[in-house]
Image (cartoon, rainbow, N blue to C red):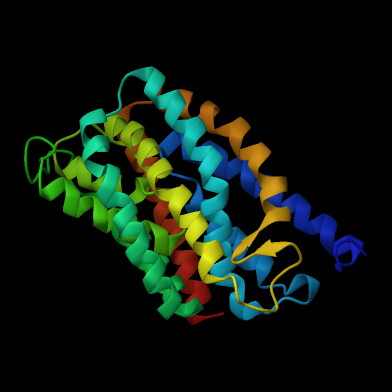
Length: 279
């Protein structure tokens, strides 16, 4: 027994986490997202096993909270790599500085109201909408020709922070759409989204610790809705793989990057809906 879990189950748990973390880190760098679109589905399945006597009712919240905590170092590493490329929109990030964390606070409040099915529905709905948009919308579809200033950017920041917190992601999924509609190049949007991930992941992870603080029947060594053994196993893989994905972004054609991102989101959303309606 390891942490109250049979050794065979524990080794399977570790192996799946390692593979998922490597993929999540690569995706984080490649698409400028926090990797949560990979980690939340994987962690939901793992926590739903009820390892260590934990309740499966907490699986979705644990997956979201732990994913956000893992995103903290991943997004920082990815943001540094994209910053070095010189493609970040630093003016937009400065406009987001207060309003994205404000959206995180709203998202945390909603997370205390929604159950596991509600969080799953939010994840699937947003991922599918963004994926279909990215796949079918014309590259010439722009609401405006440049990213707007006050107050539109601030309102967008709140929406990005709220939706991303509920999904357990770093904000790149939603921010990429916003910037694309505002005429930004996809690579500039991806680079900026890595910075958004830093603004979201730190307060959101701390928030999931707080809202899960009094919960019982959590996996061993959990602090609120963040499980620390999972962090310890997954973070090294995500840190190594994030800059590799970031470097590849700037070598691929923008159109190909967009199609890959779309396909990835659609697959993730279909998995979420399958889990929600089929079980």
